[in-house]
Image 1 (cartoon, helix red, strand yellow):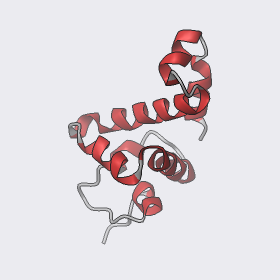
Image 2 (spheres, helix red, strand yellow):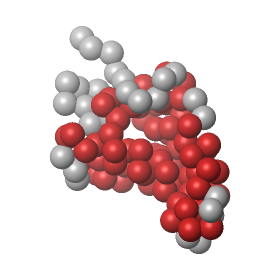
Image 3 (tube, helix red, strand yellow):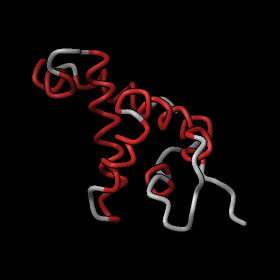
Image 4 (cartoon, helix red, strand yellow):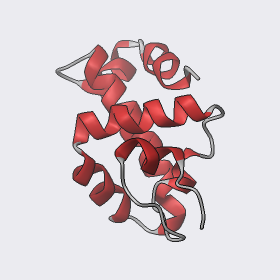
Length: 103
């Protein structure tokens, strides 16, 4: 039996060989940061919403989708009206990058 990935573990969801979250977390170094990123996105988009958004794209794009969702969620926290696009437009993109890179 394979252990659940950190994302599935914090979502209390069964993890299978075809897990859509596991490949999305490989760029994040620490297990705690992987879990925190998954919980943050699940709270922001909803557990089912996050899984549906990841599954909407092809397998090879899922890590990029996860990262984009993370940037947008962090952008919406920092700039609730315009999100990450507003941070990019205002020249404050580094705030969003710093929020995502905290691991």
